[in-house]
Image (cartoon, rainbow, N blue to C red; front, side, top):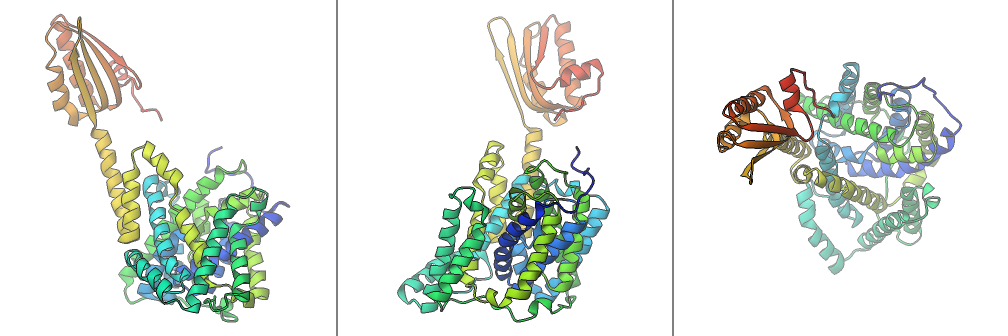
Length: 502
């Protein structure tokens, strides 16, 4: 079935109920940590979770995808909050949602997937590095610097200060952060049956209990009573040009991340496939409403989506229910959230950030010789800014593509009774000087074996090769052309149209 086609939509299945509880337990600590790392009000993470789950779940086209605040947007949102302020950031989220609605209406979802995977994975890795470096300072009881490079440079000083002149609050925060990370690492090696309980929940819960019993001086979450239900009125900034660029950036990054997550989630189950254009509409509606209500921008999140599938969800009812569980949780347990140490959320985000530097992706990209694109993108995102990193990565990916299209290797050698010509790469009009120069080395009347292993051959290349063959055979020579893979020459000679197979 085509991924754009879906079976008749079913909105709830009995298996969605337990699955929604698992996703709820995964989502809450992550939402709190992402909000804190984004420089946004803590409650905004929960609002984003609620709206992402309910609205994107009901309207979107990816049945088992779960949407909410994502680590992949953290660095971008943090920068925009610092530049514009929170109420203006809400307006940016609203505008980004409207842009996504337009993307979905124009049915350009597939075009959003044209970005090189090396650039996407590099972007996420750069974001992960930035998050980890910033949250390291929060874990030590301090505050992050405004840039990843500054955070990196400050680490030796912060650690030295902690060792030389420790305060009780800093020591308590550091211990709770380390405990959180240790639990998350160990949790990944436990049996699958145990890991049905989310490690994020266990680590934050243990750190919270320890923090309230023994490490009481560590800074904590601060959510004002009723703040979740105070409507934030989005405000337009004075810089409308910067506002539009910011909204477009959020829309594009959130759309690409959501669509990649939808495609990845489809690979985890055998149910109905995602309708990607409809998913963009769902994401746009969720972001517009989240911005209006004072929530973080949302996107499809692979951690929650994978947990949803693993827990046995069958329809989007699970995502919707997880949003409703969060509403219920906020109504009855907001005071308990204020007991969570910020260092525990920082430890959770450090673990998430490090995991965004995915070694499996690096290995795959190395096989395709695209690691350099990954590294340039990651370093650009981490140490310059997101747009610069992605721009550098896409530019380099395009240059490498052009280089591959222009690559040509021709070897001409004389053997005992014949000449051997090996041609590899792409034969096009740009390679005509090299091709004709190499073929000119072969004496008239010789027997020639041509080993043709080309990925592409245009009409100019065919004409040059065929003309040389005709001339050589008229002089008494023999030419045998053997095409190893794609029969470009044979098809052109017979007059058949040639379309490269995937």
